Length: 246
Ligand SMILES: [Zn+2]
Image (cartoon, rainbow, N blue to C red; front, side, top):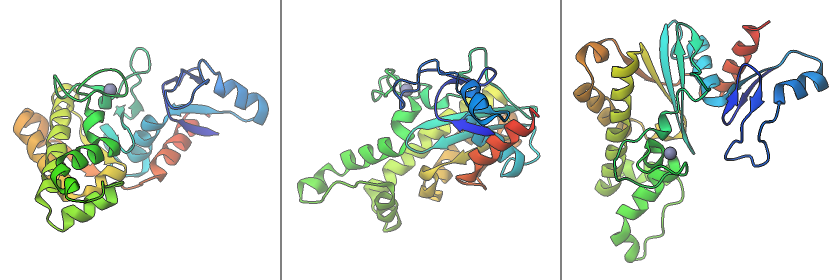
C-alpha cells in the first residue's frame, strides 16, 4: 500500500512527526502499524512529494530528469525530483518552498515566520489580500468574497483591483520560482492545486518574473507547466513509491 500523508515525516522509517493539522500524531510509526494490521508492505511519502512523483511518473513531468512540483492550495508545498528520485534532504524538510521568505517585513505566516510565500500564495492568503484590497467596495455594502471561484469570476469580469492582487501573487510566485531555477536548475516546474485555476492572470506575470530574475541559462531550459493529473497526482505518486520498493 502506498500512502501520501499531509505533513512532515521520515519516508525511510514511515514515522509521522507532529503534523500541524493533525494534533496528537507526534512520532507515530504509521508504516509499522499499518503493515502489522494489513499484512502487506506499506510505503509512506509526504503528500507534496507524492504529487511530484506522480507528475514525474505519469503527468506533466513525464520523462524529465529533474522537477520541482509546487502545490498551491490551502497551503503551499513542494516536492523535488532529482535524477528520478524524491530528494528528501538531511532531515526530510527539502522542498518546503511555501515557507521560504519572499517579503522581508511581510505578512505573518502560520509557521511563525513572516513574509513566507505561503502567506501570499495559498488560497486563504489570496482571498484575504483580495478582500483587503476591496475595502472601499466593502464599505459600500459589498459582502467579502469567501472563495477563489468568486475571485476568478471578478477577474474574468475585468475588475482591476482583483486583477492587480492576482498579478502581484504571480510576481511573488515568480520570485520564488526564479530562486528555485538558479538554485537547482531543474528541467521542469509543475504547478498544481486549486490556485492554478486563476489561469493566465496568474501564470503570465509569474513566467515574466522568472525570466526577468533568473539566469538566462536556467530559464532557457526551464519548462513551467500546470499539473496534468490534478488530484490523481498524489495517488499515482504514492503508488509509484510502493512499486519502487517491492
Ligand atoms: Zn511559513
